[in-house]
Image 1 (tube, rainbow, N blue to C red):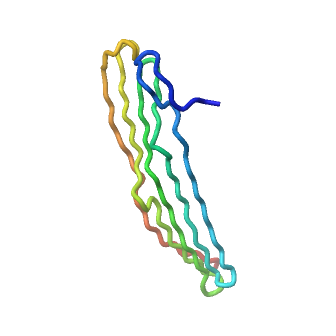
Image 2 (image 1 turned 90 degrees about the horizontal axis):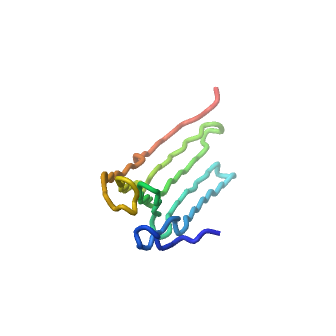
Image 3 (image 1 turned 180 degrees about the horizontal axis):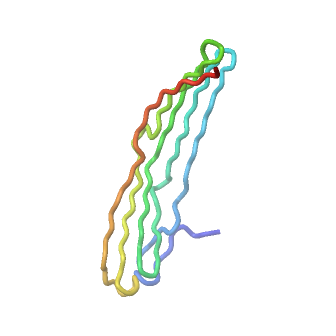
Length: 131
């Protein structure tokens, strides 16, 4: 068992060293007599991200909620049409890192890195069959 919030003995501040949880919902529904399928994948961090405290760095990792969707239909006996939406909500991940000269207890800040990255939003239509 891990405590998710502690008092940092060096900085004397409350630190969240592990995330508060993560929720995933995956859903798929197949309607076989219509040749139709649809579904979604939803991911959400509960209460944001977490801090990672090291001897020389403090890193904050945050992640936004994300949603992927799809619908698929079989027509003409063997033609499958699939429409997918990836990163529908435009989710990104951010990292804020403080690097110290010596140790974090010394408190001499030498570098700050603040960066975010994102998967692109993508809408895809694919058609598959067998010849």
